[in-house]
Length: 246
Image 1: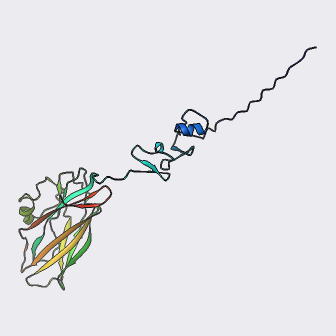
Image 2 (image 1 turned 45 degrees about the vertical axis):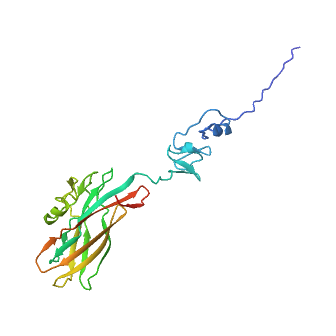
Image 3 (image 1 turned 120 degrees about the horizontal axis):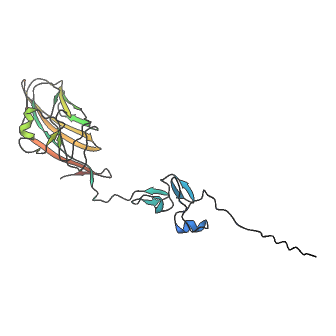
């Protein structure tokens, strides 16, 4: 009589979930594999593929970022970080006026950074004067023309050329010479001879740009620039902190 031996093999095994991922040795050991299981899209966070941004380790972030509270975070900006916005402002700060205007007042922006910039964000933020009845109106005229590094932008009135460019105050090559960035107008100014002290603050690329002038109101018609002019630096670091001085 033949005896038949029936052997039944029972396999106790599991198949790895194909949607589970791992990027480091510890992550892969947790799902019982010794091979990295990369995501086709996104990064691996807690063994699931997610869009970049969340993280459970620096392997989920760009090389310069760190993983903080589950999110990829850029490193702190060092105090000596390169400047993002940097420019000088040159303008005549003493004028003689007997007309209402408006006229362009020859404000120039000199790009001292390594990147081109435009005056597209230029605005008048504050304006005051010390005359009891007359007041000064300033108008910002932004331009979309880029000012390359090392160039000066802005239209200069012929009467201002001796004080801004001929004097060497602004020696950089000029561009955007058709754009008059700031216009000025005298409103309700009585006749006579008197001075008006003007305090203005422009805004450009997130920076405050003080613009302080003295207007000598005289019998006219006359528009003239007294031989005094200003060139002041304005800059900010990559965190947006303003820096003053050269």
